[in-house]
Amino acid sequence: MRGRGLLAGLLLALALALPGGGAARAGDLTVGMTQFPSTLNPLIDSMLAKSYVLAMTQRPITAYDREWKLVCMLCTELPSLENGLAVREKTADGKDGIALTYKIQPGATWGDGTPVTSADAAFTWEVGRHPKSGVSNFEAFRRILAIDTIDAKTFVMHVDRVTFDYNSAGLSLLPAHIERPIFEADPAAYRHRTAFDSDPANPGLAFGPYRISEVVSGARVVLVRNETWWGQKPAFDKITVRVIENTAALEANVLSGALDMVAGELGLTLDQAIAFEKRHRGRFKVMFKPGLIYEHLDLMLDNPILADKRVRKALILALDRGAISERLFAGRQPVADGLVSPLDWVHESGVAKYPYDPARAKALLDEAGWSIVKGGVRHNAAGERLTIELMTTAGNRSRELVEQVLQSQWKQVGIDARIRNEPARVYFGETVSKRKFSGAAMFAWLSAPENVPRTTLHSEQIPSESNAWGGQNYTGFANPEMDALIDAIEVELDRPKRKALWSRLQRLYAEELPVIPLYWRAEAYVLPKWLSGIRPTGHQLTTTLWVEEWRDSR
Image 1 (cartoon, rainbow, N blue to C red):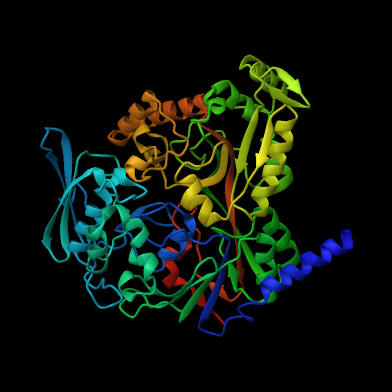
Image 2: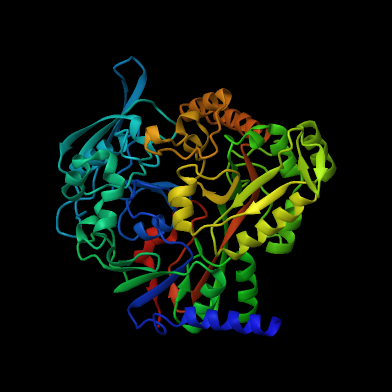
């Protein structure tokens, strides 16, 4: 039986490696990753797979570069109080606001020849602030009080507060000439009718180095050079992003030559990459990049079981996260004690920590009323089982291994964990974003330097049907002190004072435990030796945001 199972697995890997043929011809590049975007609209759903693709077709107004410095991408100069492009002003209700002047790159043109203009910025804001549009980060748009068009390439953004990162505008623009008719026909249906999904190969949706030429749902996205791109000419005529959700099959594909490289952002798990490097260092180069990537379990706080903080603490105390890090990831993915990475200057080391302590976990469960053990599973006085559903992205070997460890360790203290996984596009596009999970949802948050967690922790950011599933507070966490800290951090320009607020936020997060922190992820990039120019950022922005710098040395 073991031999037949191994043979079946080998045949599956080979079968999955065959479609697409051998190595790409010179001038082409084939990239493998494990997830397919649930949408290609830049404002809807927060998903790394989408960001990876769209970074090749668009540019945000501003971005943090690979040295973690804020820079212009679509704009020509960062507004600041010093250069006069940022000016303090009073809002209509007498509060402190700010006016920011942005100038769009003069050569920025959509792929159909239509210039990228201030009208696109104004339309993007209009969509983002509409209560029925269903954008992920509606708070960013709500803060913008108005956008004044100065000329075709200059606009002034009026914001309702002066934040420490006031000149950061990471917005990705929508093409008003294509999307406006669709949006105005029915704003509530826009997320399902956007041209980014109904007509993704339309050249007018792109103004980056590449544009999409073909989309096969769940399988691949093909990109070709965008002839209207104003910047450095990219090296590759065509880039094909192939989606292979099973990471073992992904490895087989790169070895067979069906793939040139594996994206570090959504590729091999760390344990696979470490083993891969040992076996194939002569053929490939493997880069490991630690960063602001936080693997965790979002807990559904609407579930009465998980609403009890004692149960949440028992869940984390029952886990030997140090052993998970050492045995599965050779210690390269250290245990996380909170949501702020030790690499970030605002990190607070003095938060509550939860070492492996199954005895304490059992005591907390007894205290919470789960004291009756039948068949190895805890029950309460009403006879209810202590059962928690555990979910993640199907086919990710690393996460599935971690799930099995979590399930086993929780079982030791009487918690019955039921695993139910889904393909990434369903998991992120529906289950997580619409809060359809009932227990624990495993995934990662990718962060920018000093990234204020408003969308994930503020009570106003809980997705619901009434706000068209906007926001990313999937746990349903609502804490007045957390809301106040988030509000205060954003408008505190004094760094030492802001650091003190950050410290309190992290302590509160560790005490309340709306999530179970697991570990800080490192990304593994598997590249052919002839490919150069790929420089991981270590934060939420993908390497593809600088795809025009990638070079083929063959």
